Length: 225
Image (cartoon, rainbow, N blue to C red; front, side, top):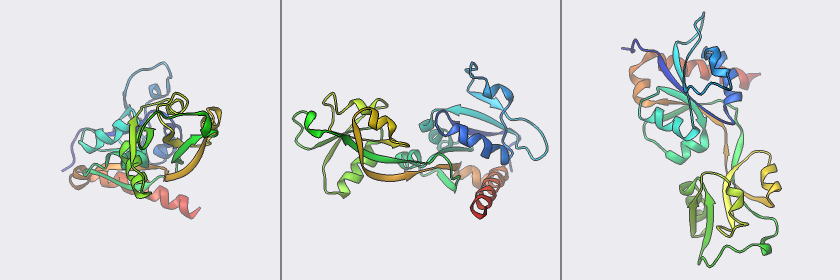
């Protein structure tokens, strides 16, 4: 039996959110007006009521935390990039719908002029990234032993400061790389935003299955257009 409490739907701060909001609205998830107030530091918002609307609490958190909230059942569903899903690989996480938004790629980059930089005396390749597991697996498949140094930001500084010779990071236009003297050399994986749900909630709460169908229908309509 479904809970009488509103669903909790997690959305990520940052690059995906602006594209996600119109898709959510078409699926019946419309956050209250205060959600759009840039000065508002609240993290939890009610959804707007109305015909065809979904009653939900919408929480706005860091992208990596969306996956954790959903996997552990604190939120029943959410939207997050496929890079985050791959990074955590939670068994309780199910990603049934590719929303075809938030497109970018997880790539390897290195200095444009490699001779100008030194990565120190490391005996094997050192990589700066916030995706150490994905990066190490990819380099292993290339036959390269990679030492991954975890950074949460400013990855582009790592080569110029001798922390690493290469980086693995999300790339959209490539402008940030170019502005920091780096070039993209390999694409590890394409990235897009996905609807994610908690597996247990999907089995026990009919509202979650209905929400999945709403988003799936939208995705099918977009493909057919």
